[in-house]
Amino acid sequence: MTENNLIDLYGSIRQGRLGNLTVQQELVLKQIWVNILYKMGYDKLTLPANLKVDSNNSKTDLKENSDDASSAASGSKWGFGKKKASASPAAIATNGEFKLHESLKPISNETMQKVFWSFLRTDYPDNLILRFVRARKWNLTNALSMIVDTIKWRQSFSTSPDDMILNGEAGFLNNPADVESGFVDYNLKKLKSAIIGRDLNGRPIVLCRPKLHHAKEQNEEALEKYAILVIESARLFLREKNSIDQALIIFDLTDFKTSNMDYTPVKFLIKCFEAHYPECLGKLLIHKAPWIFSPIWNIIKNWLDPVVADKISFSKNLKDLEKYIDKNQIPEYLGGESKFVLDTYPTEAVLASKVIDDKETLNKLKQQRNELIQNFLKKTCEWVENEDVEKRDFFIEERLKLSALLAANYRDMDPYVRSKGMYDVLGELKLE
Image (tube, rainbow, N blue to C red; front, side, top):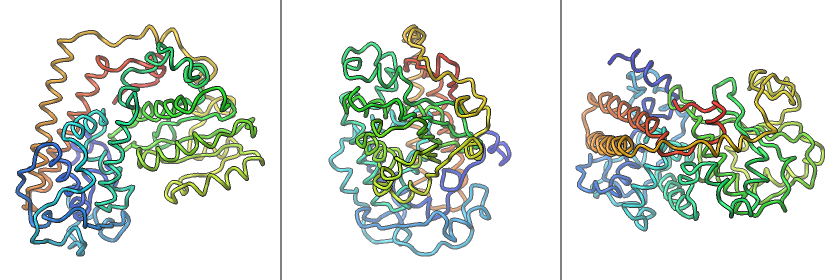
């Protein structure tokens, strides 16, 4: 397969993603995978010398824009720079054998398998992991701890984030407890948040309207579940091709009053993005902030990680929004031309939409997925064990192909496993 054909298949690949990693970045990714592979039953790997390290003591800290990272584009077709990498803790061979990171030990092999592969959907496995690695500045220990914390977090809910998105909005509409909690009437049907289109970079736009929020209308659990549903729904709009792997969020403070302010969900959202959905936020616009928001912002900004804070800007008018969004994707009430309906939730259409009941086809797709997962893991083992520099491109290409096949398999399986929501019935969501 030629490089041009690969670009057609996978699209342009941003730096720090599979297919565009420096030598040292690839090494950190391999070390992460060694730990995960051990928890998935692959504990008999023959590791190269530079992977025989105690991952509990490895303090690799690579800067994504370092000289080594910027040399990637001048290397091979997959972005591996030919410039000799400088020594770092992760690149130094040791005489010790590999030691599983302490944070992974309490997690069972079954939990690791279940949560990791259900988290994926159309993500590529490496790129899901690399979100956490980039968020922790390529620090091996910190990235592994973050991954483990997220696995535990996804298991901590009575209804997991995966079940929320698979059961869909109909699952909430049909659940008396979710009606009683305020989730349905004061969040879902109110369209307090909505995915309204794409920005100039192709990123999904999540519009949040705090003027619709009143703390007493729902309990804390309802708010958390709604926040997760919105984030997980937005993930369905991300695209591995062309590296559309982040969202733009507009917090529209039109008609905002102090009675709309509620610090609890704000704290929860900040934690979600910083700890459990890293690198998913591309830009956050705080739009039409009134003067009463200034003291509120002075409190909130102190809770933010500097990386997240750098992604936040204030906008005042249509001209400011058009720096990031085409006018035809901006709602009419904000001066744009989008016809997206923000005052009616399609309850009946969502309830009428059913998953396809075809167990034979679903079982075939599940079997295919299991085979693809096993093939991917075996190829990952070969990639980890490989010491031949000449074969590096081959393994990256093979694992990209398998990643694309896994994503395609989920798209095929989606109609049989996921209850359709508002964006499906309105024709806004097409998995790609």
